[in-house]
Length: 315
View 1: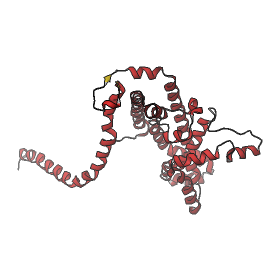
View 2 (view 1 turned 90 degrees about the horizontal axis):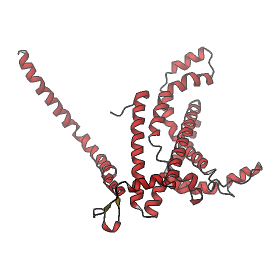
View 3 (view 1 turned 180 degrees about the vertical axis):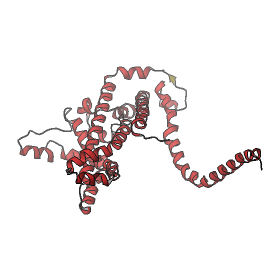
View 4 (view 1 turned 60 degrees about the vertical axis):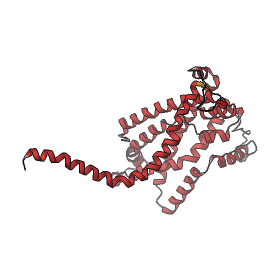
């Protein structure tokens, strides 16, 4: 067989291999289909509804009825609205504060837990700390409202030291701090799983060499553990930055009240009040679209930074 015949047969062989691979992959495609349909139905199909942000939407006319187009009117209105500006500022401030303290708590906990040698104690601590992640904020809100009330457990404890009662859930000074502390308490244990996995992947010989050189546990943590998990810290932090526009609606909605709108109102709660309480669907859709566009830009930027500095990529 000459080289010309070999060139002719090569594409044919490659096509047969592709067809064989596709046939073997068909069961996996069928398994993937429900998830794809779910994403299309609940994530992409509703994007058509964003046209409401550019209309004076009248529910009586129906979603597909003829509506009056208003262009960018609602966007110009919300940009000048003090409620929107306040909610946007609170969203950024609360989300970034949560992000910073959540990372610190999760990293410290994972390092400390990794030092525990007794497996039973280690598993017990993990179970106790992970458990709050699986509780709904609807349940936890009642618990915290009772604990943080004027005559609740926390103020009774502070009273032992002569501290005046603090209205944690009704004071604009204390409410953002309460949101951050309660969210970190609920989620830091579950978030530490990633860091624990990163710590276990560090080469044990590095610690053995450090012990031979006389390094203490603290120096081992500073010079081996933290540098070893630094790429993971960067990756997790960058990916979490993409979601700062979501300030945990469940938590804020179940804990806040009109008295703390100035410090606790976020974009999601503002959208809820404008859309479902005031029934101003066009305005609420405009706020939601603004939030989605900003979030999309932040997610894209964070994924680029994660690839640039941590080597993370989806495709």
